[in-house]
Length: 53
Image (cartoon, rainbow, N blue to C red; front, side):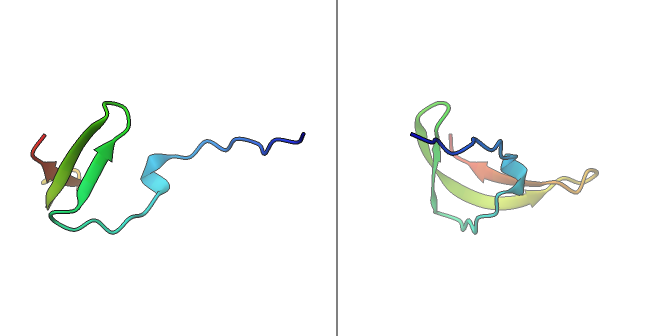
């Protein structure tokens, strides 16, 4: 049986459209939360999203 090679994927290279109220699942912790609103870091120009959890 031939198994496909595993490719390491940088999560910053994955693009999803996320809207406020969309459900988010954190596989590492098994936590479900909802997306809030987008923020841009004042100095670094990086995007963040608020959550309740």
